[in-house]
Length: 357
Image (cartoon, rainbow, N blue to C red; front, side):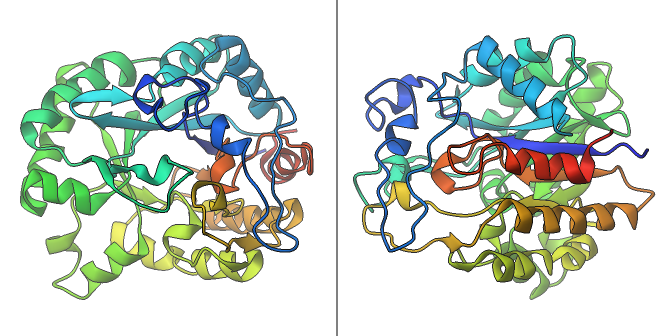
C-alpha cells in the first residue's frame, strides 16, 4: 500500500509562555481563551472542550500521548509553527521540551514553519484591536544567526523531515519576508545563503517551502509574473483555507472555493502539496465577532481528504505530502485532537483515507 506523509500543523501556545503572560495570566497559555469562549449566535458550536482536558503541551509525556495517537490514525509528521521576535525565539518550549523528546523511538518526524507574521494584540481576547507588538520582518543581520541556530538545533536531527533528502523549512508570509530583506532579489540571495549553509553543515541542501496566500499570488500575477514577484521556493502548500476563502458560511462551499486554487498554486510554484482545513472559528479572540464557518463535520472533512489523496495520486513524481490544519488550533476551530462533541471522529477520518492498514 502506498505510504503518504500526512502532516498536521501545531500551534504551540498551550503551555506557559512568559512573553504572553499579559494575555494569558493563568500561566497555561491560550487555554485561558478557550475556557472563556461563549456562543455568539444561535447554533454556534462553542465552547469547544478538549476530551483530554487542558493539557500542558510542553510536557513530554503529554506529547508522547499525542505522537502515538497521531501515528495510530495515519499522521506521521508534524509541522511546528515557529516564531522569532525581537531577535529571540517565542513559543519554543513545546518543540524543545515536549515534541522532540516524544518523537524518540518512533518514525514520526517534524519540520518548522517559520511564522514570520507580525505579533499583535490579536491574542488578547478582551479587545478587537490589532495593535502591533513585534514585527515578523528580519534583515540579513537578524536572519543569518537565526538560521544558523535553526540548522544547529533542529534541521540536523534525524527526526527532522526531508524531501529529496533535503530538510524542509517552510515560510508563512512571503511579503513580510521580502520587505524585511529588501526585495525579491535580496530574498533569493538569502535563500542561496541558507542552502549553502546547510551544505556546509553536511546536509545536501535545503528545501524552502512557501505558504501560499491568495492575495499575494494574485498580486504577483498582475505584475510581471513569477520571476519578478515570487522568490525561488522549492514548493508551496497552504496553512488554512481562511487565507483564500472567506471565514464565514457553509463548510462545503468554503472548502470548494479554497481547493479550487490548487492548480493556480501549482502553476505559480511548480510543486504544490495539497492542504485540508478542518474549519474556521476565531470568535474566541474577538469580543464583537459573530461569524464563523458552519457545518464543519468529520464526514465533510473526510471528503476533502479524499480530494487531496486524488491530487497526490495524480502527481506520482512528487513526494506524497498533504498538510492539515491542524493538530490543535482550538481558538480557530480547526483541530484534530478529540473533543467532547466529535470524540475521535476527525482522527478517524484521516485514518479512513491515509491509514496504512
